[in-house]
Image (cartoon, rainbow, N blue to C red):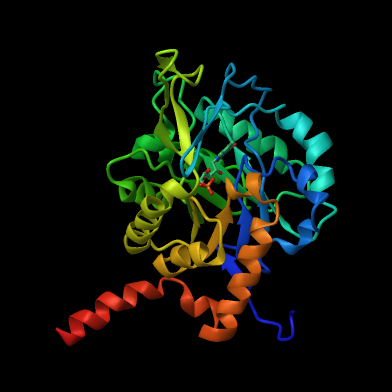
Length: 314
Ligand SMILES: Cc1cc2nc3c(=O)[nH]c(=O)nc-3n(C[C@H](O)[C@H](O)[C@H](O)COP(=O)(O)O)c2cc1C
């Protein structure tokens, strides 16, 4: 299969990856369940499920709904907290030759900072992905990621506590995603990942009430891919940071859309639930594309050339 070794290495604002394929936070746990299927060392990085300062219980059931081309989830970022993560999950992941990106969640700026401080004390985390889609309890529940000033505050607080790369994960639930992207760049982010899930809901028509106990959930999967690609395209033009593209990737062709739109790396999310090998299939398809189309790094953002060429022709 790998008759010809292709160079897929890429540097994301100081985070050197052997290949650009990652798995998205919350869709891969902390790796244990998937390690039964394949060697996690084949992935460029694992983005772990959100880690908070103290354990979070998550939302009441039901918290998952299937939709025609994706799913709605309202898990509520359930997790056992940073101490448990450091003791149980990080040591497991460290056995594999892959990068570990810790997804950090918090309800106040201080909480994000304290999670990072705890993790800093230990070896093994390669970068932080700051999930700014959490509701800020101090600001009455508004998500950090929907306000550029708040997003910048979180990024600054984390930035001041670490020299490891800081990736801000953008929420798509905004009118103009570039505003938050620019704010995160100015606040010192090394890279951006986009997108998180889209706020959505489903109604149980027979019972005449919302399906999810939480009423609202986040839509993910193939249904969101075209919107996510559009957002990567826009952010690529607005900031000067490497981007990690995600949202409905199930195949290498899906991933190539993000890469050509400007993503330096990609993450496979919801597809992991239906096909545990999805990320590996994406990886081998990208290898194949590089064999045919030339160097990986030259593919990043190449669809933007189309407009330049067109304006020259016009
Ligand atoms: C069940 C579930 C749990 C998730 N948990 C997290 C999380 O803990 N932190 C985070 O930043 N994103 C979380 N996400 C968002 C995904 O990482 C990803 O951004 C989103 O689902 C879009 O990609 P996809 O369509 O390929 O799933 C979660 C998504 C799903 C479906």
